[in-house]
Structures are given as C-alpha cells and as structure tokens.
Length: 372
Ligand SMILES: [Zn+2]
Image (cartoon, rainbow, N blue to C red):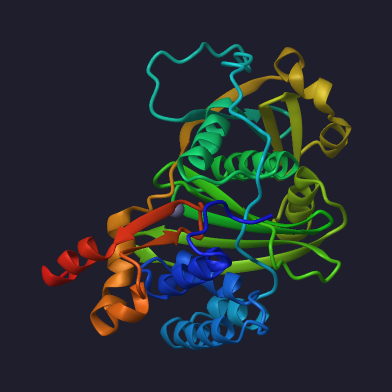
C-alpha cells in the first residue's frame, strides 16, 4: 500500500523520510527517540536515504547521550512509515452505552475528551479503570480523513485496541508520566505506536506497515518519561518485552506480567467500552484470575467500588505547522534549495500521529527572515 497523492511517482516515501530526518532537531526527546527507532528501518538499499539516515542517527547520538537513545539507535529494530487505504468510513453509531460503575452518577460538567474513571475494589485490592472510547475513535478517524490517509480496517482495529489499552494504562499511572508504546507484530506485520501524556490529557498514535523489519518476533517496547517542565524530568526509562501472541490486549497483559510490578488484565464490556483491572499488593489473586468479560460487566453488583479519580483524555498530538517550521528553520538557513528542490512547498509527516503539514517555501522564508 502506498500513500495517496504523491506529487511525483515514488516521491512519497522519500518525502516522508526527508521530513522525518528533520525531526532530529525536534525539541521533544520523545520525538527524537521515535525518529531514531524509525530511521533504523530504512534499508540501506536506498543509497541516498540510507546515507541521510546514518548521518541523522549520528547527530541524534551526539545530541542525546541518554542510555535510552543509544539503545534506540543501536537496536533501531522495526519501525517504518506508511499507511494503507481503508474501506473504513467514519462510523456513525453515536454514543454507545452509558457506563456507570459503583452506582456513581453521571458527570454533569464535561471537560474535553473521554472520561476515564478509576475505582478501588475494596477487599480485593485491585484498581479498575474504565472508559468508553467511542469519542476518541471518532477523533482517530477524523484525523486520518483530515490528513488524507487511511489505515486498513484490520490495522485500525489493532490501533484502536492499542489506544484503549494505553489510555487505561495512563489513567492508572502517576499524573506526571508520559508513556509511549511501540508494539511490533510479525503477523500481520505492523508496528503500532501509541503515546499518552498525563499532564496534557492527550493520547495519539500512528501505525507503520512498510519496511517493517521481519524478525519473526512480537515485541512491546515501553518508554516512560516522568517529570514536568517546572521540576525537570527523570531520565527516560525503557523496557522491552517479548510477546507470545498477536493480540493487543494480550500484549499489554504480558507487558504488565513481565515488566510492571503487578499484573493487569483488560476486558471488553462492549464494542468500545473497555476495562483494565490491575492488581495491587495483597490482591485477591484467585478472584483476579477468575475475572472474565461478563463478570467485569457487572462488577459493581457484587463488589464494593470506591471512585478514586476521573481523568480526561483526548486525541491531541500537539504538532503544528509552526512547530514543523521551527524544526525546518536551521536547514532552511543552511540550504533552502536542498530542502525544497524545485518545489514551492513540502509536506512533513509527524512521526507520532501521521499528520501531514504543508509548508510553503514562501512561509518558511518569511519565518526565517523574522529571525526565528
Ligand atoms: Zn503529530
């Protein structure tokens, strides 16, 4: 599958790669790290691209001496950039089930985004996080339509599960934590990238199907960045877990089992309504392991649930044309002709969400001329 509307035959991939290379200067470590991962996949067969990619990796290595970045660069296993067409159209099924757990009443004030409620299950010592993801999924499809790409239906289903699992995970984590997961499946061959920021209440993702390295293994790679701009950040932490199957929820459960200090399980209450139950110390493990979808649906009937928190998440990457121009500005100052060639504009794809930003030469010249 290829990206639609390449300006020149075969130009689409190169355009995307070029745009990715420019992210090497992105102020956001997570973006740079993702770039390192993504670059690793472009095959040396494409000589010019391979050369660019190697040079950029070297630059990243120089700038980011974090252990995690070095690992990303050295392992740079499996990401790729690309997407497929989809027969999928925006679903119009409206708001699914209104969910209430523990007899809590519905909220009256509604901040932006989907609401996740977390509960403590008394006497069982487990945490429950639950949300209806219909709204987030609509935003995910709208985002594709807006940026002129479509994930294949079967890939979109994986993506939706990954978004749900990640968001439920984020809601169960400290507020100053930023999580990114890359889930690599060998069959179907795909890399799912999802990331969530608890500070901003934002989640976003992208999936990659082209040039994904086929090593026959399934992996989940987790990157955690903890901190905030005022108090600073801890060094990013990474863990990689090998998976046994190609089910997203199974992958996340495996990740919890191997990498977190406590097990967690994911359940489907309805088509877009999901629950994560994570065990706390002294959890009633017999009860925990016996849970299934139908038991979780009626959890509030048999268990005493205490509402701990309500959090809100929305689809939001934060990438903008202005931000892309910030990234492009140094290259524009150095060699505008190399950047634009004969074209009057270029498109940059965001490696986190796939958004395509069109930057005209005129606009970028003006931006640079203003001394920014
Ligand atoms: Zn983006």
